[in-house]
Image (cartoon, rainbow, N blue to C red):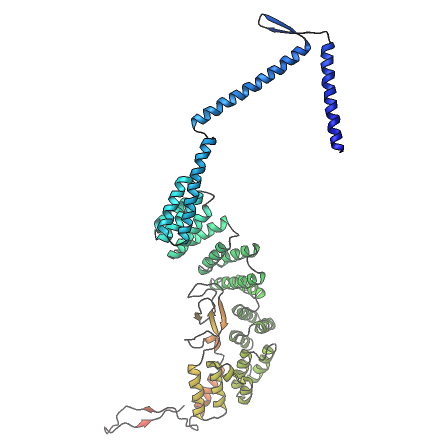
Length: 496
């Protein structure tokens, strides 16, 4: 309401101003003289104003006529007009229809048809940013890798399609096994789109396979920054990379750098078995036995493993069997009922020749978790308690055919490794190894899993000392060496 009143007042003021101006011009006695060449015109003020307005109108009409003439010239010259736009819409309609048909052919697995439709779409549209990728993918589907590669390279010249071209070439080089070129392409793709998850994963895998640990750590940091990786997963994988870099540094005689990286790896992932064991050994070499003990206890609490027990034994290598049992009881205290804890203590009790305690520690693992290790321990217990050799042989026979137990197994391809590695030797997967029992095991226990160097030695020594007393009979073997008199050979039996 107020605004309407204001507009009315403005209109009235303008009318009043114009009226006042016209009245002023009419009342004035002055005249306007205009001289053109030798002709002079005398006009009243009102007539002069009217003439000025007519001149302005004429100038406006002249500009409009000039614009119409210019538009006519442009039309004759072929520039875009309503008529040209009509024909262009028809070409676009045909082009997009061909593009859609090409995409459907590509999805249907008809590579040649898709290539033809892509070429038709390019003729109508003239938009390589839309049709080049369809052409390249259709060529790959049709088996024309040369055409696909050529198209991908052409895409590199256009900023709109450069990343897609690099990614296409990267896929081809990976399929060809050209990892060096693939690495360079992955780095280029990463520089173009550092937040692209697939490129990050590909570059990380290539860097890990190439043992470029420092570069892989930078790529991993980028994944964390973009939010594509949980922080706990990042810490674990960064620890794996740091430990791998540390091993390379130590092998290159960069001991100080290697030890620092090992400690960083253990700090980020205390449960990573190889880094925890190595960090403890580094501490022991530096005379820091208490620190080594603390590291191994923390690691055992998170992930009991024979390699940790081996490193724990190295803290005091000359201790007695009884002292070792007491010290190891502190190690397994957080989870004494874990299978690894029970097997470890059973082995230690056997080394101390406390066979009833070993049997108690082993419990029913030979039934609930029958592995070569648990069954071999049971055979050692029976042997130590003086059981019949048939019983001992029965346990050993079961151990031969039993599962090898937990081993370093790739979660991607189930390949078994004798020792932990950051990259699977079979499928190239990064950080895929876990200490688990594989579905089917075809290899013997690894050295890291054989925590019985003292036990085996003790059993062998004991059997050697008791050979004269214990005439244990194993399966008969035939002595095929002829007797001196040519008579039939004697049947002999082997004893332990």
